Amino acid sequence: MIGATCVGNDVVDLEEPRTRGKVDDVRFVARILDDVEAAGLREAPDPDIELWSLWACKEAAFKTASKVRGRPPPFRHAAFGVRWDRIGGIAQPRSGRVYYQDLEFPVMVVCRADVLHAVAYTHPTGRLLRDEVGLGLELLDDPEGSWTAPLEELVRRLTPREAETVHSRASAAVRIAARVALAEGLAVSEERIEIVSVPGSPGRRPPKVLLDGSPAHADVSLSHHGRWIAWATHVDPAVLGPAPTPHR
Image (cartoon, rainbow, N blue to C red; front, side, top):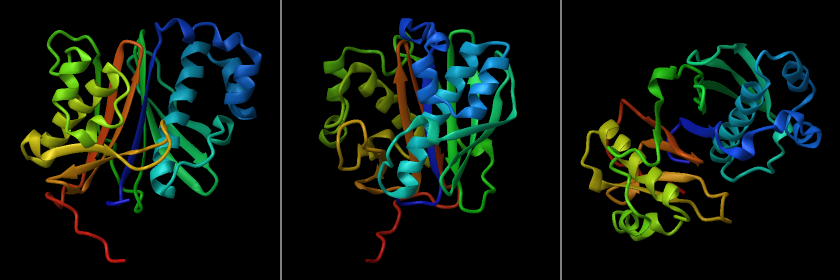
């Protein structure tokens, strides 16, 4: 992976019907949580928020681990252990860490009554500040959004390499929204940015950022669920422009 910092994010639409009642699904909870998390769920003042916060952190950490490892690892949710440092409530971010094998990822969750958004990141020095990670959370059908259009129109705004992995209107919309954020972070025009996916099987292809067709000193993670699209970005503040081609 080009660059030292990796980010992953996940969004959960809490009003999506399939998110309801899962705290009472014994098989689901046992598959998702480890023993420590399950005990915390039983004591949580809002079990639904607790369950989906844990889920989102695991999903975000999996995306980050896929970049660190160079390929997606086997994904067993219970193998990604979430430990909270600070538990907030509605509109109060909670933070903690996710542990997976020899990896450790700081995580943060921002929760509202109808949606929650988690981000995980890694940095080799451990000095990355949360405010160095750019976060975006928007309604898919926001009438003011540059991404709000029929799928066919959105696809026309993507390059062929970007469109190759698009599978829905939300998938196209989040790419366009994140591309705008990356262009701002890199201080370049949007048409110079591409968000493409590495080779691999569907659903297991982490996105990467290109600037003028070459790997950029930036990272991005994309997510969408129900009514929401979300993204996380990191741009190396010390280096703007294409990353050098690594020696082999």
